[in-house]
Length: 238
Ligand SMILES: *Cc1c(COP(=O)(O)O)cnc(C)c1O
Image (tube, rainbow, N blue to C red; front, top):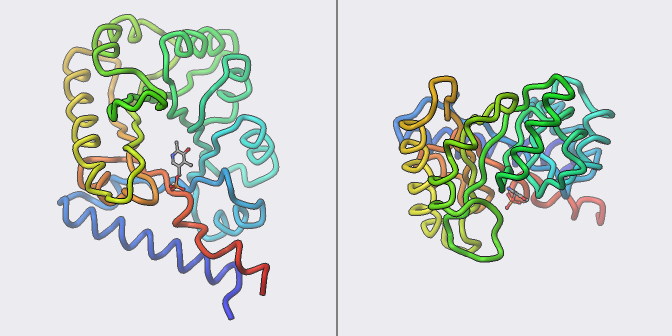
């Protein structure tokens, strides 16, 4: 019978092997991709074990759980924030975040910049782009982003480090490919017209169902939740 540590180790090493294989297919160095463990639905003991297994980048989608876990778990973890960010939670969120992936409006970016100035912080952020055209998805529309880019770049305290997107939620991972390819192309376009201090080195794209496609299309960050914790909830039933 498998225990928590054994099963989590198996899941983690399986995902790491798939990341390496995708890197090989794409002629990329394995170090160019960071696996982020999305812990929003994970129990605290699973997260502790994941850290013990060497996973250093973890993500939460809600500020209260982010702050609680950042305060109680290892200080060596890089916490990523990937959820909708309310403007009244910006102060606490930037305090604990290594990177915020989900900046989905000019207003939010301006708020982060203002709060960062007050807190004397230089938070790193990604701009979330809605490329799937789904109305219920968050993020900048592409044309909107191209139009406002120069204004966004004028913020002096946030560091815009790249782009993030969510692919359409369907079973076939290949459906994500055109979306991820478009995000990479958009990054190149924006980089070409950005002020010199802005370096868009990060592409956050790919989740449990499509992270290999993300890597093949240039992802530097993949956000994996359910595949990492698969089967763990059943253990307690034994
Ligand atoms: C939950 C979540 C993930 C992880 O999704 P899985 O399919 O469980 O891997 C990735 N990114 C964001 C923004 C999420 O909210």
